[in-house]
Image (cartoon, rainbow, N blue to C red; front, side, top):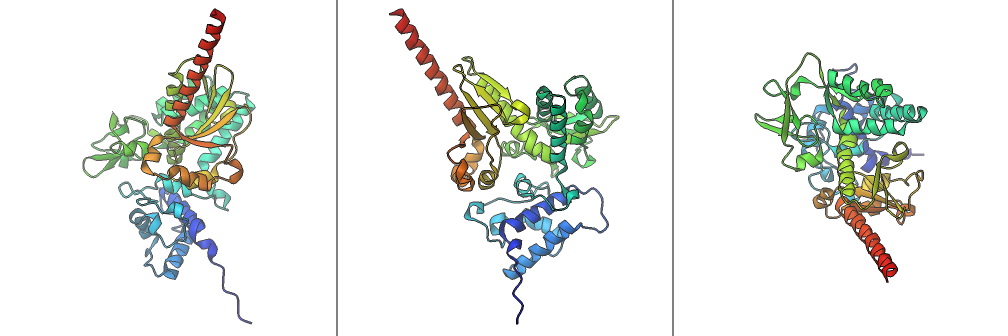
Length: 385
């Protein structure tokens, strides 16, 4: 009896793209050659990519370093994978062609490995901080922690020590906070100094002989990232948040705090709370009539993946309506952003969570406030009559 053909369907489409993305992120974190040179996860991802290419009669990359180059030059929609139409987006790469580092899209595709040692260290750190804040019954400490990672992604050792010891809310979190920051490599210096991005405060990556490039999508869209403060190497090392934290805490965090500021500027008795009850969601907006809107802010490149990964909002603290908010520039970059998100969103969440741009949300809040004012004026008029 002939043997059944091996089922290689797992090594196609989304699973294979996730394997390769995970391998690329792992490679970017390596500082020195290992023994063996490449871990099993990296080697397996490369092997299965080669196998897929050969099955589809596509010339594969000839080595692991060539796979990195390939991911920087070949957009995802041209890979020999049977991906849904939602992924057929031109100019979507897993490796940035200028910095040769994983793109945000690559990080979004990263999958959890079955190998416990390959767990995302950054996620474990956030979980550790949450657990410590809950143990101390101090949601304020978690809020202070998030504010630090958003507003100060780059610090010297002295500044890091001062930031975490001068704020009583952060003192218990010092060890975890220090592990959030990596020592900055000298490769980011130009003419002997490091340069911050004027918008986000992360370090710019030198490109060519004169240019710079910010790693965050929003800053890169705005002229690549504007040069801000220059930092000369001091007596101690300069530290910067680990890249996944810069991408998924600092980047969206700037969108969160900018949205908070825009909402608070509307006034009219509006109360905006950040990361309530240990980050149940990002913003809790309380209106004058005590209605509550829960808002989660995501700055994601892939709307279909965002829809698929969206989960119900935690119900404590309670709310009346829930909104998922994405910065407006993402919709400008991709005309079908909303439709792709809705196709990925689980059916049971479709009526419960609504996707808006930040500008749309601000308009809705402004209109709601106008409604309160109109109702108040009518009531006053009736009493006056």
